[in-house]
Image (cartoon, rainbow, N blue to C red; front, side, top):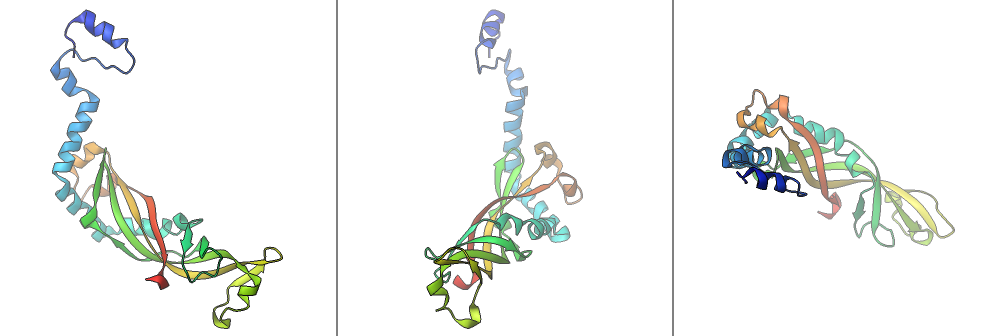
Length: 208
C-alpha cells in the first residue's frame, strides 16, 4: 500500500508488484476478495457437503458421470498381479465395460480452493487386459482359463483376457465460488461441473 503518489507510481513499474492506494482498495482487490470468499466456503463446508450429497441422492449425476466416463479413464492404465502370467506380472488395460457398484465417500470430501472439491470414489469394472506370455508358459496354463493369443515374436504371444478390477480415485466437482454462497438443492444442478480428477488405484478383484 502506498498513499504517496510518487511512491505508488514508482512501485507500479516494478515487475510482480501490485500497488493499492488504501487499505480499503487492498481489501476490495480481486485476489483478496477471492481469499475471503474461500474462507467463507471453508466455514460453510459441512452445509455445502450436505447439499452436494442430497443432490447426488436425488439425481445421481456424479455416479452417472463415473458410469459413462470411468471406463474410458482406465484405458492404458497398468494392472499388477501375481495371477497375470507375464514376466513382470503386469498387464495394460485396452478395453472396458461401463463401471458398476459405484460408491462415493462424502465423509472425505475435500475443498481444494477456488470452488473446486475432490470426492473419493470406488467402482468395479470388467476390463480387457493385454500382456505378453512366453509360449512355453502358455501351454502350462489351465485349459479353462486360457487367454486369447496372437503371435508377438518367436518366443512370446500377445495375450488378451477379461478381468474384473476394483478402482479408486477422485472425482472433481467445480463451481463458480460466488455461487457457493447461496448454493441449495434447488439450484446446485445449474452450477456444478463434474470431471474425473484422478485414478489412484486399479487392482484385480481376485486379489482382494
